Image 1 (cartoon, rainbow, N blue to C red):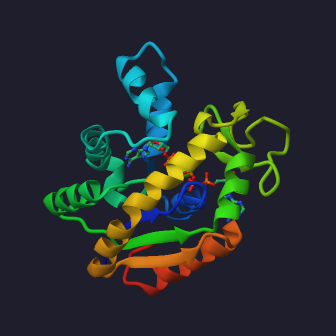
Image 2 (tube, rainbow, N blue to C red):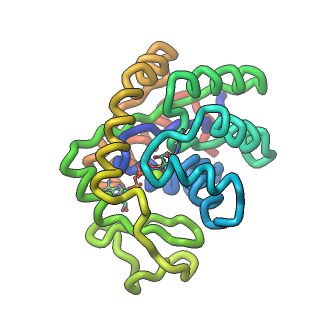
Length: 224
Ligand code: AP5
Ligand code: MG
């Protein structure tokens, strides 16, 4: 049986981070989000890498493949990833998808499920403009769909909630444009591998999670 080696793909705001958190908690496997990794580095503005990354992340542009790959490689070689992983926001280019494939072959692993969350434009815009994120633990909230108990305070860790810099309208448009240019080839890659699973990201977070959970449990994937 395979471990839970899972990808979550989809447009900005489709709910990748939200689902990855739920799956990570349910199956006790690490949630590896390249976006969260970059935002963590950006917190320290004295860091040279942070200055370099800011040029891309705040404008909604893709960080160069070599930088992303180095980080993902190091993360997947970590001990905690041996029991499985959930990759959120990676791969985002064909080159990243092929490099991931080579890396997994090198360490004797394979993708069990590549979840693709489809979402409509109206839903994406409403979710991104209403999103609030914990400065400390990166937990996701939504002012309408999943508000914190106390305004601007994270339920999980008490950290302050903020609105991401790339959730401005012009940057959202750019992120969607880049996403649209890359996604078809990547979907075909995982379809041909036989592990692509499409779910409507427009459903409630609980409904999407149920669909993924059912699929994992029906597939020959070790989940406990
Ligand atoms: P990243 O952080 O990955 O951003 P993204 O792909 O644009 O996706 P988001 O995080 O905005 O959305 P999400 O799908 O996670 O939705 P969420 O669960 O938060 O990347 C950011 C930047 O980093 C990139 O632009 C790029 O610069 C760089 N980068 C990252 N990876 C890279 C890579 N591989 N290569 C190169 N560059 C890279 O949900 C959104 C909101 O909706 C939340 O408020 C949530 O509470 C709510 N919500 C979620 N699901 C539901 C639901 N079902 N019903 C109601 N509300 C919901
Ligand atoms: Mg996210």
